[in-house]
Length: 231
Image 1 (tube, helix red, strand yellow):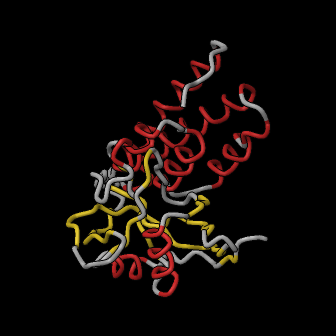
Image 2 (image 1 turned 30 degrees about the horizontal axis):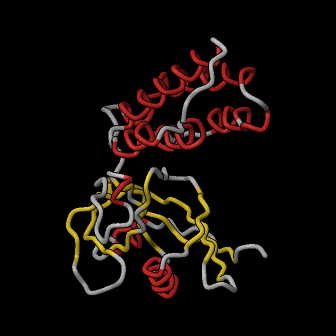
């Protein structure tokens, strides 16, 4: 069976309203970047309850990363403060009581304060993290975008066709928003969770582009030397 799918909802007002009491689905080693989809199999009782409530409401959850993987089963593990805010765009309830969901990351949030509301899951007061552009706006970052596109192009002969780097390079060439470009490339090409979190947590688009540029340059160096990058 395929997931029941819904169109992603990315209207900023809806995201901002959800930040008053934002449900969180914390995971170890998972960093979801804006624009990226990701499927999850939900089986733990508290998170089954969370998704049932979210599906009955605004269909929005935050996906923060657990700081210490060893604490993942704790009641309230420490969380990294910046998270992706996600729309549930697909869901399927399984015969065994588990649920499969498809999330689409619609933006960044900063978790400010945990709300103790007596629910099985955790909720936080949060705020949207807006992209910060340099003086001159997106046009001032054109050189950085072109450099990132060139790195993607240089990766094409070093990666198998199924990696999608060719489609990624084409997408970068046609996109206009430097912030979205940085997120798209990082989502596709940056695999190490700490590096992905640095990209997620960076509101300044110029710095974000440089972070992604550095990660792709390191990947290109490894592949050109015949070495396999470690996840």
